[in-house]
Length: 195
Image 1 (spheres, rainbow, N blue to C red):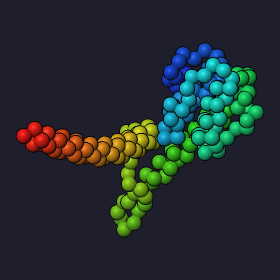
Image 2: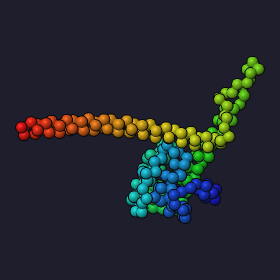
Image 3: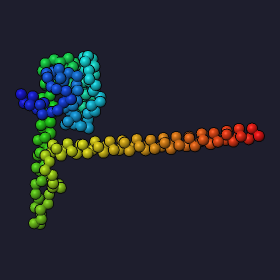
Image 4: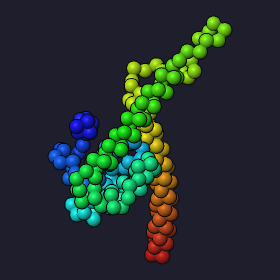
């Protein structure tokens, strides 16, 4: 029941009906993991699938790219069970993921509390870390931090694309100039040969 409450707080791309069927193609799991680990999940890697073989492919990609790095890697047999919609299989994995996320939140909260403890030296108060000056929760802070990092990556990728396109434009401009020069030479040659 706690698992269902947790899932109800997550916004998925399709309405939720039956957990085993909803998660069978791996898309719901990718969306769930994207919420908590945005830099690890690229949703375009998980196309909608109807056949068990295509569902299994999605799960294999998810397992290799996300679950294994998180220390939650699953066996091929387990992935087949989830892709086939066998009752209890995806629920087991969801419980593991929820426990991990809960543990990470508790760890963050402890670190935040420890980071704001005072240290007294020569009657001056120092913070162990820079004081936390936000009203955001640790989870929101982490989410915003990862969002900023992903946006910086996007900006970097886009600026390199812009540089590449600018270089292409320079090459095309040079080519156009060369072709115009050839056309002018041909026009001059025809004009001279007609005399």
